[in-house]
Length: 451
Image 1 (cartoon, rainbow, N blue to C red):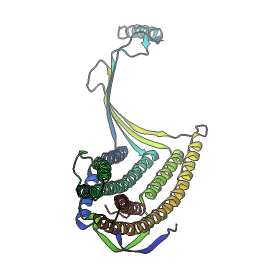
Image 2 (cartoon, helix red, strand yellow):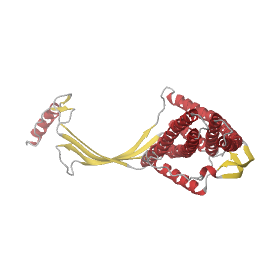
Image 3 (cartoon, rainbow, N blue to C red):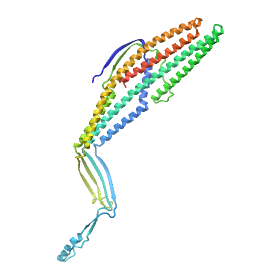
Image 4 (cartoon, rainbow, N blue to C red):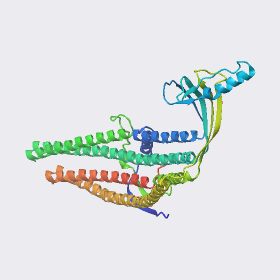
């Protein structure tokens, strides 16, 4: 298996959105909390614990099994058997009595024996132990491997949860930044309204200027309200992932959006032991062991048993009714109309299907890494372009506002430039979010997060 390695350096001239140390510490705290308390992850842990208990059950099959059984029966009627003892012995006894001139040999009656025992009990302690049983051996191996399969499944979910928590946190940061942008825009339009009112009062502008400025204030207020609602929803979703009250405040750093780095080194490599592949490998081993189990019908099962108890008429426990019984039981399946043969063929087909699935997942993961990196690189380039747009829009607004105060620019021109500035800042904020989101995708694709 050959994995492609992508190594490159992206020079971003002060345009990459990087988390400061305090914010990174906050995020790591949230990740730990999410991994400890997420309900879906807990459910995965329950399944893993069940697999461990299944292994213990499989191991217990190697030890002796002891059971106490007691049966007491009352019967009437049923099949009977006549035994003519009197007809066979009475003539002989009579002759003996004549020869010995005595009555030492009494006459006996014919007997009638019923097959159903009446007033009969059998109370015993039965101990059994497998001596040769390949099914038990292979079943234990399967349960051991299934624990690894479940563990790999838990690791897959944990990595996906880390990515989801990170992206939800970045979404909250972007929503919080949007609120700040609209609040800043609201300050600008309110200042524009104040200046317009002053100009109308001085007779240098008409009342229409004030009405336009008020309309702008209302428009930005509506956008600010929507942004605040988006932030609240983002916080609720983030808290949901952490299994904490939805209204819990989310900690942020006010300087996050202003923290940049001049150079970013990206190294992406698909790990050979990625959990999805490990999970399929484990499944292959389970199916291979199952195939061996199906072939083991050629080996007979041998069990040892030992019984100790009391048996007899009348529910009594004495030396007359005491007994012991031990031995070996051999079971060898010789003919089942090719059922074992078909089971072996089914197991082989399952193995072939998983091998094919492994190759497919291999290709998918390679594609995932390449796609994640390409998206990440594209997001950085887009953010670079938008940074220039924000800078240009800020300078244009500053110059236009100054000309407006001096009466050299129209109010409509100022409103248009202000809208451009706000939209540019929002787009740049979304670009920063895209970079962080794509970075989380790369981290997930390369399984590089360390638990």
